[in-house]
Image (tube, rainbow, N blue to C red; front, side):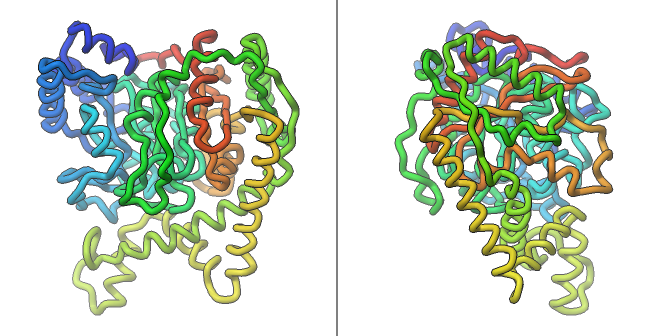
Length: 483
């Protein structure tokens, strides 16, 4: 049963081939057996999962149906879950049990999903390797000596290792798409505002977006259907109708205009990945797509702009973690200042401290105009580049990452080297666009992804292209040895 996709599970449950309770027990046993190798979970919720599975079976027995009814998933550990530890991968929140459910958690629970647990992540979603977690690094199931990508690396590793069919992730600069690429999954970052951020602990509020991670585009469509929608509790949520994503999967790609930016194929891209991207382009051409060369001239400024804006927002968002109301508190503080300093110094890891300091500096008097304001102007130029490109093409295609996964610890001494792994993904967050990564092949036995970007609220088009590609290729069906 662990090799079944969400779509196959939905059909199996509908045909009464097995119950949600049987499936849940099978997957919980598999997690107990295999996850010690991966460290993909922070918390398991066995009692809750079995309770939800029994409830889903009862709902089906009463005549209810639904693609997610009885489907097992896991949540990245920054979605608040009532009464369950929500740690953000940080010592700061190691003792925090959320008093409410995030909107995403509540919506998926109402659809009948079964929560198996909370997955490991880079601390406060800051990282590209899932090595900054207080609970230790996550291992890539394709090679346990390599990183799975981050910050949603726990969700990625768990799904890739067939511990469960799908999981939620969040994407601030590529944190769904990059780990999806490095673990052979399909991962989708929706349009900013498409999925509620209420109850999703913030890293950078103008960039964060929750989304689905699964093995196929079909499964991402099913999970996104349950996650998306307007939320009055979230001031950044957009009141836009949610289409039936599964209904558009089988549309023809005849005449679809796909743009390939010349800036994507620079010296920083592994030539073997470039070759696989060109192979993907040819596959889509066979399906009727029309390929066009385009330019995104301001892409070169994306990384410096992102690493001013994101840390600036992080320094503001993380100021609430001060040892007073919740989270880690130092022992025997001498006074209030000592309480603040030691609680934050002990509670936050090195990468989080680094970004808080960079952000505070960028926002400080005398530097706001020089750094933060300029970065926001560059952000606008990047968005304008995309808007101009989408006047000529329907989809933009390129690599998800410049390199395959790297060895654990290989970039720990050089944070900037890890930041550069986000070069192709961060532009979508800066512009608020939807983006998808899908499996495109292997380099030295490690997975590689191809990224698709679309205009606002065109997630259905991304899923359609990815699904048609997956009907004609088998990269997404490959399973890591031993799992």
